Image (cartoon, rainbow, N blue to C red):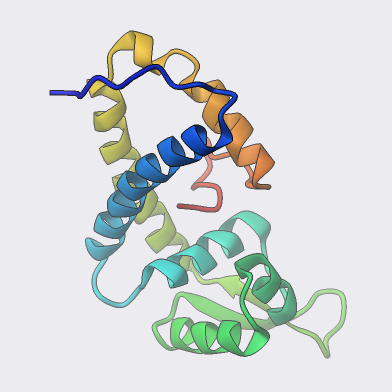
Length: 164
């Protein structure tokens, strides 16, 4: 049974932040369960890397590290593991043969699609349990939140925007 809560003052940044943090715990749990169902070969940070490659296309190591907000050496270790399991490939750039870019393999694309489908299904169940009045404005609010954070939009036809 949903708990009732006092009316949120939407101008109170701390109150809004608390509400987002609470919702994010649920979303991280949904993401973790969806990734776990794919097997024990992919971690949550590695899945984020896969989604970035899915949504942004082939990237240089340095650009990928910037999107992940990690050091290049950390990104390189993540990529090494994902190359080993066959979901990421190193390729010569179409711009310069001396430049190496990272891209999803077919298996990587399949993993992103499967995990995203599981997440979408579980999130849809949660949204369906919300009363109509609670859903009012949710799409606009979450879209504005994602845009403020620089995330590309997810859609029912695209695999997914950057996570999670």
